[in-house]
Image (cartoon, rainbow, N blue to C red):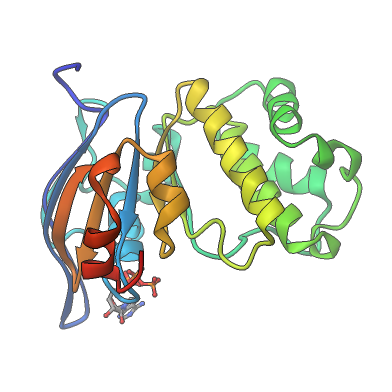
Length: 236
Ligand code: ATP
């Protein structure tokens, strides 16, 4: 294992106004790896994602990404450094076409545009067929693909995927997981936030379980067995 993890999070805390939502979370994301972040509703999973990606400030602790302390960097800068957060919900521009959505995602990134678009269509060939279609008229699954394509096309170092499979038909969930598996083979590391544990644990190397803003359990994903999940999540 390499000495310096890609992402090194230490004693990270965050709050909304006077309500503390994260209490001193520490974990490492090694290069070329995937972590599943699990926990019941309101445990702090999305807050952890927002804090790491700079959308809300850390009130304590540090985040090092690729050897740089990014704790006080803006969300835009963090994105440009290669850490892309896909927030819960589809996040596509409903009135624009598929192609316009892809091009807009490239406006802020220093990448070869045609290569990036080709990469998006490699991940999700159906988007090439739908390139002129208005995004709002795509199915929920296709919108999710577009959202993921916008992230993966820029060759990020880390993708934080928040509840990607929420509300998707099982076949679409497979498509999303297949794309993330392909992304891993391209060297993308993944932080996968999921309320439903099974698939995430199969996908990930390591697992974190949050409870009321605290890190309740952390270990290799294969050790996150039914009994443990039942204890923390109330389901296996
Ligand atoms: P879910 O699975 O429901 O998304 P979660 O584990 O992602 O849950 P968070 O959304 O991070 O949990 O919420 C953690 C805590 O912070 C909860 O108590 C929640 O009510 C609170 N919280 C989340 N977002 C906000 C906000 N924008 N303003 C105030 N409090 C918030």
